[in-house]
Each structure stands twice: as C-alpha cells, then as structure tokens.
Length: 161
Image (tube, rainbow, N blue to C red):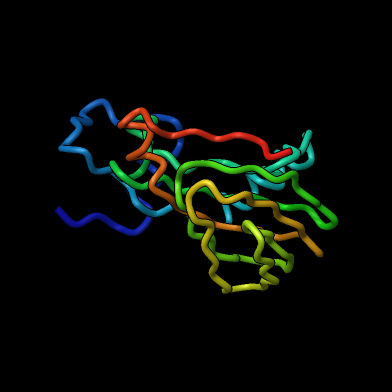
C-alpha cells in the first residue's frame, strides 16, 4: 500500500502506535527521521543540560514500534557538540562511522587527528580511543554495529584515562 509523505512519521513518530499495528519481521515501520525535528530535540536537551563529558548531547535512533534499534544489526546516533566542547576520550567495541551534518571540529581516534566540517565522513575502529572537539556548534550523525554486538552480548564501552 502506498501512503502519502509524512504518514509514517504521523503514525509511528509521536510516541504512539496505531491500534491495528502488527509487527512484520524485524523491520521498523518508519525509516525517515526528519532532521529539523531531531535538531530541535538536541537543542532543547542542550539548553536543559547537562552536557555529557564524552558525547555532548547524544541520542540514539529507535524503532518506534519496539524501542529497539532501527535495524536489527545497525545502531544509529545523532549528537550535538556545542561550540568549545572538548570531550573526554572513550572507547567501545563497536566500529563507528561518523558523518558531519553541521559545524566544524576535530576528532582524535587513537593516534590520528581528523579535522572535519560539513559533509565529511570519518571512522573510529573498534576499541580505539575517541574524543571530539567542536570549534562551533556541530552535529554528528553516526552508525555502528552496536545493535549486533549488544544482541550477542559482547558490546562494551569505557572511559580512557
């Protein structure tokens, strides 16, 4: 059945599910998460504070029908790094691909330093220390194999001294 644009967001994106919803397999009923709404959420959370010392303001995308990850093996995230943010180093077992939505900054991955701006892409391999700095307000979209690792019970994260 073909539905009009915005139908999935109206049906599944407001913290509600239609009465007739029946899950079909492991796919999410919506796969569009409008950036304007997401950006508004990040800004509100930033204003309400506090900012996480490693991640800034970071949220994960979810399958609204289950509360789980949007895809069975892939986790997706969005994070706001406010201007002047200098994040503490952390590492995790999932390999992460970052896409810069807006802003400018620098990320340290292991011994390598990456300066980035809008539309840049960089990768943090598994268990390499990662820390982000933002020159101006920045938003990073990222995705990783965290969903698969959590399902297998092998995902870990820790701070790096």
